Image (tube, rainbow, N blue to C red; front, top):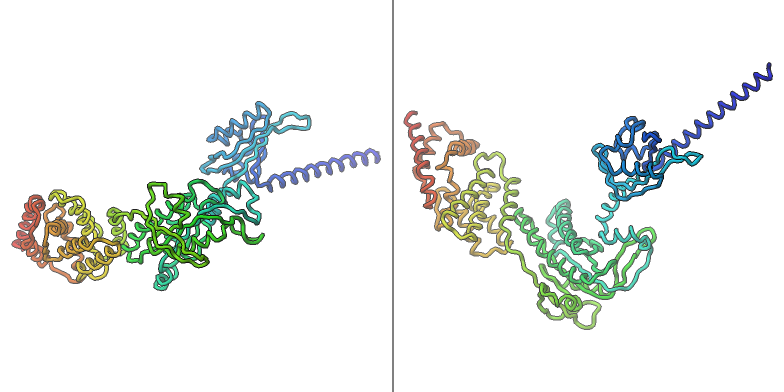
Length: 552
């Protein structure tokens, strides 16, 4: 009896140990599965998901409870391509792999590499499927971040060829571009540190976008200077052409960039550019811990020297560069006196690349002036607001067209309309004169013809009450400024003006009526267009006010 009990106890103990071992093995397998960074889940023969790890849950974007026990077609109902892969694996018992698949799951988009394999038992019989999903989001994020520091071409080559990570170099032909901001040191001394950083960031954002557009490799940023390589690590027949196109677009875009800066009372940025072509040593230079892909050699030094020779707004190229692009009709050059540069015995033959300086961008100027006004007009004003200025712009264009003014002059009339109340930002009591001073300063900086500056400032000054236009254009802006006197929205504008006046001095209702009567009696429209369209209604407004005064 005791022997039988002992035997049974022994069997029971062994079974318990076996169960514990099975549990331990299952826990171990679960821990391994959960630690795998690749998303993995398995299905049974019914197509139900019976196991899933944390990485897969994150990709699928569902709680574990909502995944386990559900058919894969339910879980991936919005991803027909995934369900087709699993179904094909089940039917054909083959492993299927696909790359760069966009997975849309419960409001989350993830790019994955996916592999589906048959799940077999010890008898080599299918018991389901195992699905592995590699999340590429982090890789894409890494590439995107890396490309902010290194050009796209180098990133792509590093990912395709890890031998590029080795120290070393090779001799090859390349074109090198240097650009440098003229007078930036003295400019930055008058700026706050955060303004210096903001200015450089805005400038570099614009320039580097152009560099990458023409497949340039940004080698380095040296203070306010840029060094760009064309032809390394990849070389094409268009390398030198692309360098010149880059330089031209940099100068052209900078003109528009400066238009914005000038309107916002910031100093414009001027750059000089030098380009050379020749033999260089290209490769990774540095240490095993940190290295830079760069080019070195006499050709690089000469490009830097040419940049130093270039004046503001100039593009100076070596004879080697010009010989490579002179057959292209889109490029024109001017021969300059050979220059003596450090490290060279003989003077270097150079040319200045000619480019079309873009004309003044009126529409861009209107937009930037409007933004400047929105940011800086005193908020307490109820009449001299951005809405009033916009109305004057609209009315001045309308009247000018009716008066058959040339299109080129209408642009200047609109510019004057945008600027006619800008003086309220600084000196409300003499806002016309202050606005004319601002217009003179910014338009001079933008190389506006003196005659046009005089025309625009004359229009601004003509709006001073009592209005005193001296020519047809000034008559147009004067009529536009007070167009509302003969419109249905007179009362709205009048009340806005009263509120603004009462910021300084309170008026009785009678005093305000008397001011309006006096002003309307004295006012005249100057253009035929406004006389025909507005006089009748203006007289009705005047009669109404006079009647109110009688009733008082």
